[in-house]
Image (tube, rainbow, N blue to C red; front, top):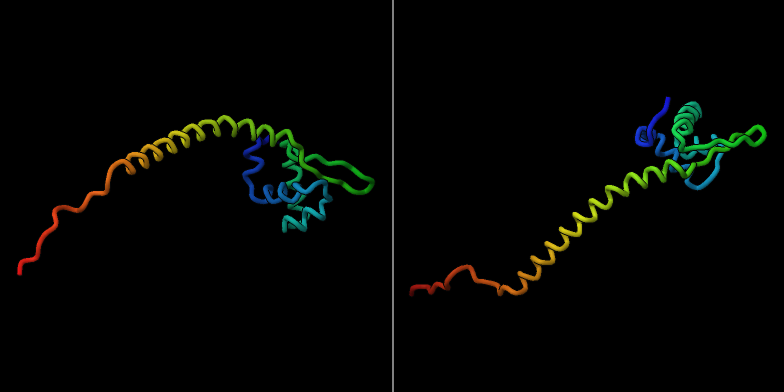
Length: 121
């Protein structure tokens, strides 16, 4: 089963596992403790993350050590970069419009709400 990066990270448990692995290489037991689910669930999610390229496993005697791989995160960064430019341009235009409105508000003196009325005695 080949998942794209978004499908792999769509599951909140897999995102917790990724967060647990941010600090570096860890055994399954450490990931279980940080992710807060049973070992069988962590193992299943680690397999999915491994199949999608996010996680690598290194045998160390009887232990299996898991760590994050940078490539899928770069893929995400590249994809998001295209949209970041779009949003930055829109935010720049929005900022310019706000600045123009502020400048025109400073030039225009405050007006009163109509003529002053005198009270009849």
